[in-house]
Length: 128
Image 1: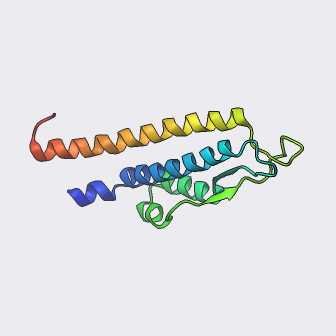
Image 2: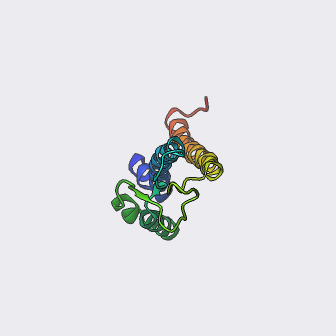
Image 3: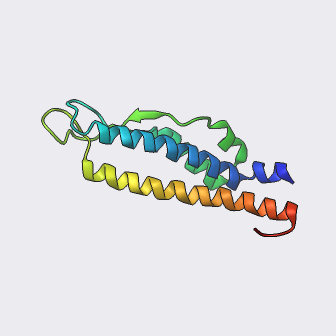
């Protein structure tokens, strides 16, 4: 029974999404810290990783989710420099991304916590 809980595509996807949102939080915090650094380029989770993760989740393929490995950061391409010094970080957008990322992390944490609470209730036979 434990193996089926931890091998479920929902649990695996949620766990990986928590890792992704934690790493994205670090990237967004770095972007905010460097908002005034000349020449700094915005960083975020690698778009190819995000696309692979979304497709694996959509298809419900646990094997693919497990094989994706750890997310990586990359410079965001295609953004125009917002200032003459070459920095392309927008304070307003970064704060918006940070808030959305915090909500995503909270939602994934609640899902994982709920799954583990159901398991605990199944083992002990009572809710606490």
